[in-house]
Length: 92
Image (cartoon, rainbow, N blue to C red; front, top):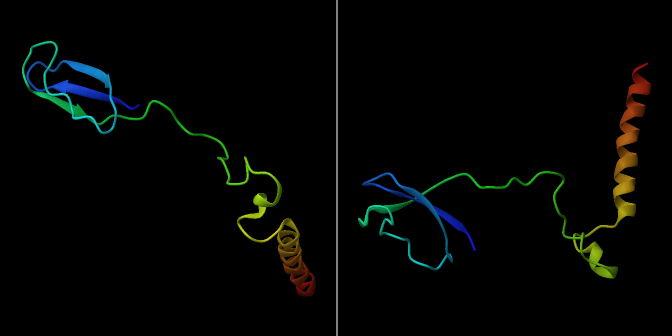
C-alpha cells in the first residue's frame, strides 16, 4: 500500500498515512482537529538504478524469444557494422 503525506492548512502539521489507493483522502487533522488536512506531493522514497529488468529475465525455454529475432540475427547485424570499417579502408 502507498504511503501518503498530508499537511494541515491551519496548523501546518505534517503526517504520513498508509492507505489503499481506493480510500478517500484524510481531512481531519490529528493535531488541531480542523478539517483542513490536504494531501501533498512528495518525492518517492526509492530510486530504480541499473540496467533494469527485461521480459526474458524470468522466462524459460521457448518463451525467451518473445521479442522476435534470435541471437544469431543480431550477430549478423553486428558484422554489417564491421563492413562499415572497410569503407575506411577504401579511403586510404
